[in-house]
Image 1 (cartoon, rainbow, N blue to C red):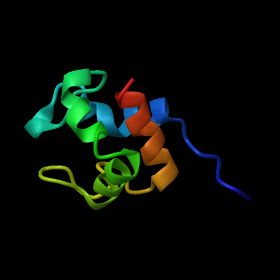
Image 2: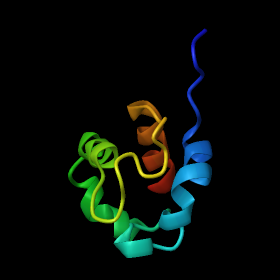
Image 3: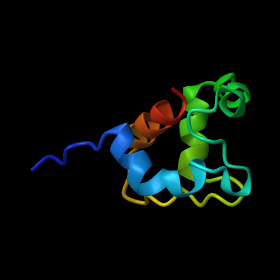
Length: 81
């Protein structure tokens, strides 16, 4: 059986919002264009790599150790709208 990918909104709500909704430990806040602009300049592929490996206070894959790279990308896309 093939596992269905979770939506970016679903991953964000369950695994990312705790930190990214308020900017815990310098996390870029969701839907805050000025927080995300310098990061987006590096490209989405780089943002996904950082999400997978972790950065600063964020552990690898944040709090979604079962997320695929595509699900993490969808969550980042959701946060950067």
